[in-house]
Image 1 (tube, rainbow, N blue to C red):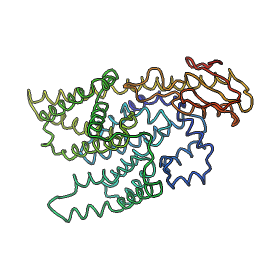
Image 2 (tube, one colour; image 1 turned 60 degrees about the vertical axis):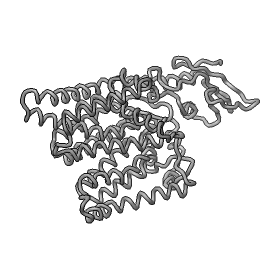
Image 3 (tube, rainbow, N blue to C red; image 1 turned 120 degrees about the vertical axis):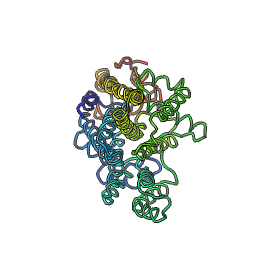
Image 4 (cartoon, helix red, strand yellow; image 1 turned 90 degrees about the vertical axis):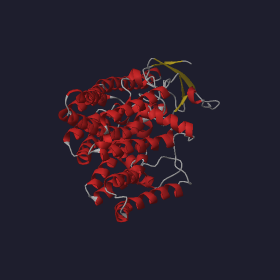
Length: 463
């Protein structure tokens, strides 16, 4: 826990960037009654009413101070780690597997967007809710599981996985496929959450015009989905950054090598003979199911935050594998120990790469936040008191930080969106208009226009 906290702490100082300002402006201009009204879905917006309410509360507590937002997100991450520890302890029956799994998820390299970019405020709580629901269900705390699972549905889109995940748990751990009675009992246990999920889907589809709002148009052909699956597989496994950067140019080759390595490990370790094989199957199913959700609904749009939930399944898998390797080392003799020792050593090296990678990513997010602050303050210094009705037209607006994390479609961002919200907040005025040439905005004729160009975090007047 100490290592994970030290690895994550440097990024807690990161400032607001890009879409953060749009969410802050929305929270600042939304009343409580209107916020509660967001529980009625619309085809024009995302549907995360509990997640949005959480951010609204945070705004009214913290305003434009970034640190507390990061601390709240990190708190949800720690809660997920503890829940995962307890879940693996129950699934695998040993503390070694649980501790390794908790460490892997605590230091996952994909958490940077979830904790250090506040526009992704909803990924941390929904993951904690899904893990909490699974643990409560496994402990036969059905009322608690129902409450947490229902909350997850209304916190963020991945909450839709609650019933499939619990169905996986039931089919692996509880259902005797030769006894019909166990099937019926399984359905009875899942029925309350099934009803809520059906109502949730019906509400969204029925009220929102028959579709779910999305930020991209996914491609769903067989070839496209296969490419997405390879991308997710590679980015879940690859470390360090230099290897991750190869994913775009050598995606198929890397995926085949990873699959081949997995087959080789299976031959060496023979997981089907382990007493903990159900935990292995559950972990693999968790990875596949959670990855499939994002691949089907978002690919080819991909980002590290989408890998945060599959990381929980990978953590379970590695925790169980590490515990089994340790058992084989203790029970084996001579050359029979070499395979498990090599696997355990490889996992240890892979785990050790995480903290340095997180530190480097924290530096990038901090630098991106500094650049954003510099752009905002430089704008005010360059144009301290623009006339009423002035249009500020920005040129060369930086989309992302210069050393973007490979393979290039993830953070840290600078002003991919919402430069207008950031500038207008700094001026504290509503009588100005902020446009960028990147968007191809039409400038009204006869308007007072100030041309502003951004270079190295500084703003100068003139196009």
